[in-house]
Image 1 (spheres, helix red, strand yellow):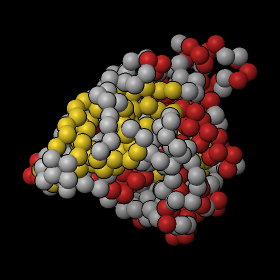
Image 2 (cartoon, protein in one colour):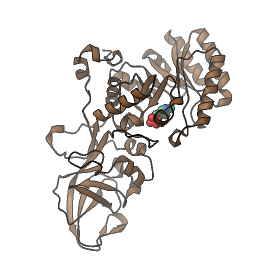
Image 3 (cartoon, rainbow, N blue to C red):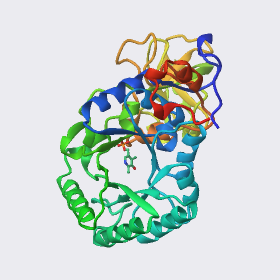
Image 4 (cartoon, rainbow, N blue to C red):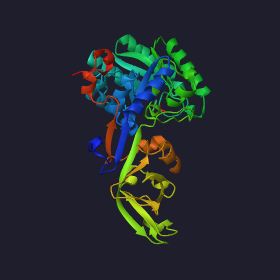
Length: 403
Ligand SMILES: *Cc1c(COP(=O)(O)O)cnc(C)c1O
């Protein structure tokens, strides 16, 4: 579990960690909810993209999301354990997953082949109540989802189970391979065909869903009855078309300072040598905390009023930055990336810049943050107590605690 940092009001923090800005999650959620005619599912897999699944889920439900989505059943049960009663879909499980618990705790599951369907149907029969399933068609990824050649048979088998009273097909889903580069016409066409085949099999899915963040932002024809948005809620736009609010700041205090002469080798293998006498500051974060080692020598942080270059190799637990002739005090807080109080807009590095320095996408940076980092949540309505004490009128039923 990620340990809480000390009180946010207590000034610079003594250990590295992230601050999650729930007001940003709230604003992003509202902007997505305003764009779509149907439901907004908040996708909070991978611990809410490293931002905290429960906190992001609660915030999103208070600001326009009506569904939650995760990969594994375990993640879904974690949301239930936290008291969230909104509809939840879990879409990627092994065939021997505990579907009986899914049925009992009202978790919808995605099904992409006959064996999964039969396992889920057995769970429904055992529970004496229909298992709620979303049939998942592979719309062009050769990854999860039913292969197109198996789809009609899967739909027919699902209809048989509906008639037997073991499952209810509430949804049909696909996932677009190429939405971030614009519209994915062939994925969309495959989905249209899949929905038509499901109907021909006698199924009447209420929720057709295809779009994730990129398609939601760029391709209204993909919106259907529900969109599944994860990255966008935490401020990441894979399509590069929209200005969303970044929701995470990663900071680390200075834990060492050295004044070194010219031609000093820094870090493992001396991949950097100082060109002249300079001041180096040491931050106690490294690749074990999620700072990509490949960004060594390219990345920058914000520290003591300016951007500072990361010099030498990022090591497991430590990173060195070059201050030139500027001074800094032990304990001063560096921003690795994210919005920073006191820094002019646009001056601190962004998660997108770190992704560029590491030849990756921002998703990998935020989901790769290490477990030993602290994490604080600010803004939004974070505690269930706060939500429960708000007037019932503003609390969606989905958010009320089951306990
Ligand atoms: C991760 C995921 C999403 C959310 O994607 P974003 O681009 O982060 O919005 C939606 N659907 C499926 C099936 C996913 O795996």
